[in-house]
Image (cartoon, rainbow, N blue to C red; front, side):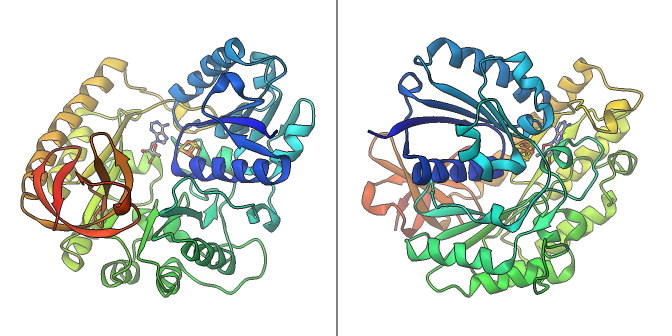
Length: 432
Ligand code: 5AD
Ligand code: SF4
């Protein structure tokens, strides 16, 4: 009988993909199969995030919970970004943990499972790292890594310390993975990297040079592939060529993530983002001009050290002008190893909460206005998920969630839907 694997994934899409790699390796090479019942698991894994302090605390409370319910002899492994950053300290704080495997070491999962107290947290790499067995959670769309690590040094961010230098994955590997997925029926590929539009700057070996715009064009030539998405691009690298390719290539979904972080030039400088408010607005408006249907999402950090009311208003000003379809907003969280952690004038919790609430409330109003314009619109939806009450849900090209009546036979299909009842979180409609 096969052994059972329980895996919990925190954090971003890169972690979701890393978990898929772990599952693939363990099921093909060690005869594990997935379980959602932690009590029957022979191996319990948590794939961690360290971008803010909260998920790090969560790790230790979760491991405490695992100890209580796990069956006799079951192993516990900690993987991902917090594993990279805390390393062997995890064994000290949680002695029941059997192995610690950093984000850059996922390819060593089989070795980790078979070696007592295995610690794999180096930031080295070689190309064999990209060569995994295959497993995908979603049969209709698939995540594909195009680069690992990050070369930027944003002063608030721990990621360069957990995922190492930025290396682009050779094009032929990405193309092979995409083709294989499409042959199996995948309609949409989702390209992943910390900084996708910096693709092609550094490979681990001598490979033909190709930039992100060319990569998008080449992948769009794959027959039967319908949609291409990607995250995250960096506003600094949004040159005209990239915006033109994005706007004109029909297979590229018209939703763009443009992480702003702050609208204040002074804060942007202290964050080392490399652009100004003016540059950002220029890129956003150029994008809207080339591609009027685009929906733009962003990430914002409020209460970065030294952020004044004036600075915060600059951020709100960008929100009013760009009118983002989606905002992921966070209170600044002090992270070890980062420059910002040592900056004077850290902002108090009360001010941070007030700013975050203000921003989120205002954005909810903007979103209600945007969503109201969708009434009676006809959109194309890739259905990917069954919902309670004989319903199916999927995403529009512009990344809105749409739900209609329907069942299994709609899954994996792209259909035209008329929106009848647009709500903030879901647009309800009918297939036409
Ligand atoms: N505090 C708060 N938010 C952060 N992010 C990254 N580091 C921090 C931090 N120290 C946010 C950024 C990034 C997103 C993935 O997480 O907005 O774009
Ligand atoms: Fe993803 Fe960053 Fe969290 Fe790592 S620290 S899981 S890269 S969001």
